[in-house]
Image (cartoon, rainbow, N blue to C red; front, top):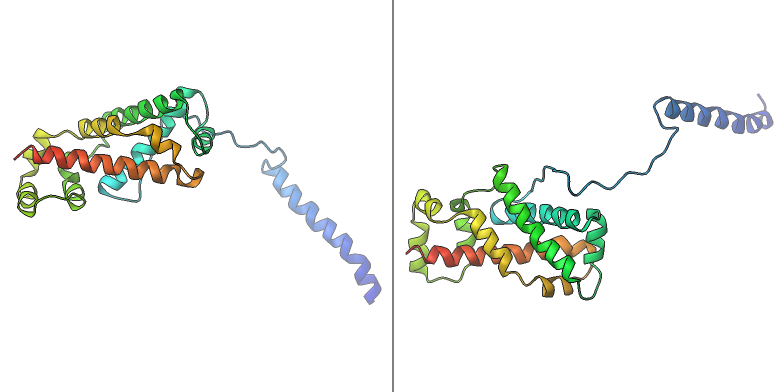
Length: 203
């Protein structure tokens, strides 16, 4: 085969190869393209976390809470996240939906058994609390059954959520990427402070 005939044959070979690839895709259902629908925020889903302790708990809480808020508002999670990340003041409906969505998340985790006992959160809370060393040592010495009998995780989370200044928090968001991070950080701090204060009350 001459050089000229090779050059002439290359486009034809390319057409044959492309046709073969397209044929395989069509055979396996690739002939019809449908854009992915956003996930239904009202549908139950399993949410896991790469973190442990309070960090992991609040990460799951916020993800489920935003789902619950989106469900209440009748929008997708993606649409709500994008809206909340915009600069400016949030509406009363958005603030109320997020607050109630977070409370829904607490009830949901309690119902499916994914809420850890309060004793699992003690070390994290005390590590970030500014307590007298003697008081801190006394709290750490409390047996887990004593802590769990006196403190319930769902109650601690509910108090922390009710204490959140959501209007200020949502008004100070920078962008969509930091929404979960900033809300998680605020919830984590509120949980730690609530738990530490209630642990002091046990002594």
